[in-house]
Image (tube, rainbow, N blue to C red; front, side, top):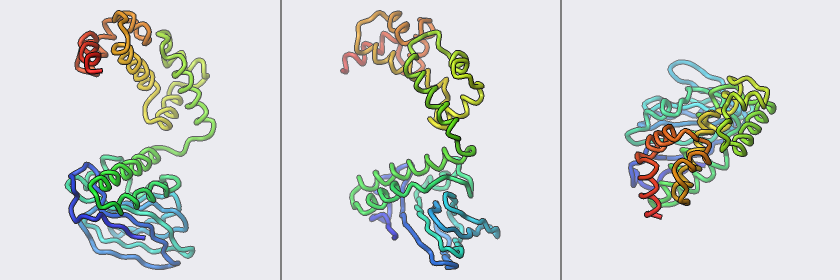
Length: 270
C-alpha cells in the first residue's frame, strides 16, 4: 500500500507536512532500493525483519524497531528469511530536516509495537483531497512521532512501575488542593524513592510529578478566578497555594495578567 499527498506542495506550511505513507510486506530476502530524495522517511517495523543500510553500515531490524533515512540518503532495505512487514511515512517542507532532533529520534531505536491504527488513519487522511485532510494527516503524524519519542528514552516500564505511576497520579488527583502535599510526602506515602517516582511518572505521563501537581493547582485556580467571586486569597487557599504573593506571581507568569486582571478579562469574555 502506498499513498501520496494529493497536492505536490502542501496547501499550508505546517510544522509537520506529510508527503506520503505506506505499508510494505517484503517477500523473504527481497531487496528494496530507492534513490535519494529531498524528504525524511521514517519506518516502523511490524513483523519479520531485515537489514537497514546507511552510510556503509548495516543495522538488523526486528519488530518494534523504528529507523529513518534523512533527506539526501539512498535507501537500501533487505528482508530477512521470514519476510518483512513495516509501515512508513515521509515528510517534506522547510523543517523536515530537523524532525529527528526535534523529537529526539535515534537513527535506530526500539519503539515498541507499531501503532498500525494510527497509520491506517494517516492513510485515510491522505486520501482526502482537501486542505483539512492534509491538516489531519499532520496531526496523526505528530501522534506517531510523539509515541516514538517517548518510547526510546529508557527500557520499558515494568508492571510494578506502571502501578507506582498510576497510584501517584490518583493520589495527586485526589489531594492536590491540600497545601501540605508535596512530592516528599507523596514518596513517603508510596514508599518509593523520589528519583524512581520522577522517572516512572515522567515516562508514563510525559510530565514530572512536580509539574503535574503544579498544573492541577494552576488549572483549578484559573477556573475559580473566572467562575466564582471568591477573594483572591480564598482562591489561592482552595487551589492548594495559600501563599498569596507566590500565587499572584504564578498566575502572572503563566497568563501575563495578575489574578484580578485575569478575572476581569476572562469573566467578561465568558
